[in-house]
Image (cartoon, rainbow, N blue to C red; front, side, top):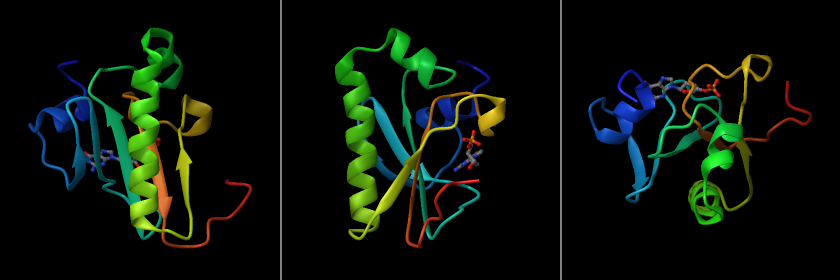
Length: 113
Ligand code: DGP
């Protein structure tokens, strides 16, 4: 999508600190980290949020996204990590291209705020 910031990051048109990349998934560092390790995992295919993504995705596409997040989390911290997906205004979503947050490197409170 032409005016989507994460589509532009995937395409390399906006710089980001990349951690891992495949043809379909990109892992990069969050600009505003909430933990010592705060990564974002995005699909190449634009979808506004998780609901829109899974409505059109093949199971393999969903699996690839979570596999990338899991690999990134374990690499960041073998002692634990958290995957967060915010969907919609009530959840605090601010960028409307599906992204998985991977947080690690500190004790993560529960329940989250
Ligand atoms: P959310 O609130 O779930 O929509 O999270 C969006 C996240 O995206 C937020 O933690 C900040 C991050 N972010 C926004 N713009 C950029 C950017 O241009 N580059 C990077 N690396 N992260 C961004």
